[in-house]
Amino acid sequence: MSELNSKQKSKVAEIYAEVLNAKTIIQKNKIAGELRKPKDIELLYGNETITEISEYGVKYKLDLAEIMWSPGNTGWRSALSGPNKVSEFYTFDKPEVIIDYFAGIGYFSIQMAKGYPNAKVIAVDKNPKSVEYLSLNAQNNNVANMEIINEDCRNIETKADVIHLGYIGNTINFLDHAHKCLNENGIAIFHEAYR
Image (cartoon, rainbow, N blue to C red; front, side, top):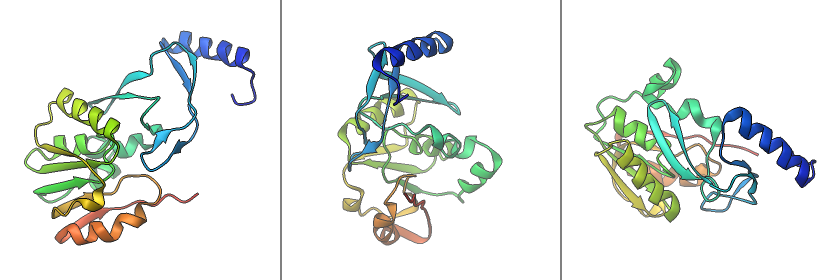
């Protein structure tokens, strides 16, 4: 849509809104900065940027103008509720403590808390706005076994059986810290995105 003028974009957005029964259409560009915030969003139709997305039995509420949402991670966000290969990947032997670095609005930590109700899930994110929605999403999804921390994950020294390092770029910079925080035979879920 970047090559269209504003009138053309509005017309296309209006059609999308009608077909999808959407109240708002946003054109978002890249996610930028340490807090992974949307950069230069363009409101094409409607005026409400707060939305609710349902996936695999979890409802996520967020403000798309202020917080990242990655539709491409949908299969991975499913954790134990998803396709066999994904649920096998997220199957752990009775973890007592799971830490989710870069937890955002609870993309992975809510599924893990639901999938491992006897584990303590610690969700860590540096972005205060993300943490605000994470708290709301944990409450809305009846998750009681989660501790939410608004902090740089490198300042968290808690030992864990599983540490999830998100699906964003530059997580390699946090791998040493995660390794120091793993219990013996602990598991780090690590993904590095290259550009």
